[in-house]
Image 1 (cartoon, one colour):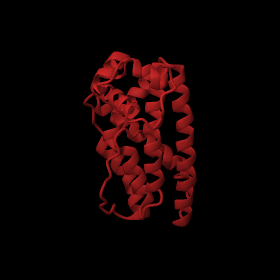
Image 2 (cartoon, helix red, strand yellow):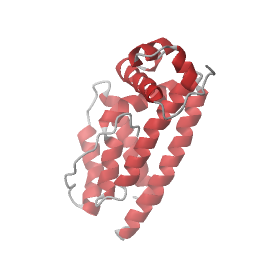
Image 3 (cartoon, one colour):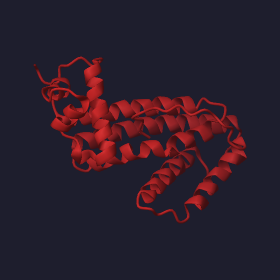
Amino acid sequence: MKPGTGPEDSPTRAALLDAAEQIMLEEGYAAVSTRRVAARAQANPALVYYYFGTMDTLFIELFRRGAERSYQRQSEALTSPQPLWALWEAIHDRSHTSLTMEFVALANHRKTIRAEIAKSSKRFRALQLEEVARVLDGYGYHSETYTPAALVLLMSSVSRFLRMEEAFGVDAGHDDVTALLEKLLRELEGDPRPVTPVAVPGELR
C-alpha cells in the first residue's frame, strides 16, 4: 500500500476528509490525527497514509475542497440579480468561519498550509475584484472612495474581524459597522431580496 496513491474519487477518501473536518470543527486542528480521523471514518489508520501520504497533504486536500466550494459559491453569487448583496452574504456567512479560522491558525505552524492559503486567497481576490468592477461599472457607479478594491476589502476585512470578536463574546459596534457597509449596498441594489440559501458543507470563505 504505497502512501498517497489512493484514488481521488474513492468514498473512503471522502469519508476521511469529512472526518478530519468534523474533528477540526469540534476540537480544533490540533486534535486531528491519523488515529482520530480513521476512527471517526470507521476505517483502518493505514488508509489515511494510503490516500494522503502525510497529514499535511490531508490538511491541504481538505482546505482545497472547502476553498473550491466557496469559490463556486462566490462565482454564482456575483452573477445573481443582486451580486453585491449575494457576495456579502457569502463572505459574511458565519457557518463557515470556524473552519477557516482553524486553517489560519494551522498555517502559523505549517508552511505548506500557509502557501496553500496564500495561493487560494489570490485566486479569490482576482475573482472578486474583476466581478465587482464589472458590477459597479454596470450600475454606472464610479467613486474615488468606494473603488472595487476598497469595497471587496471592506466586505472581507469587516466580516473576518467581526467573526473573530464574536468568538470571544465581543460585539460592541458590530451593528453600526455592518449598517454602514450595508447602507452602500442599499444605495446600489436596494433592499436585499430573500433567497433560498444552499448549504455547502466544508465551505471556506
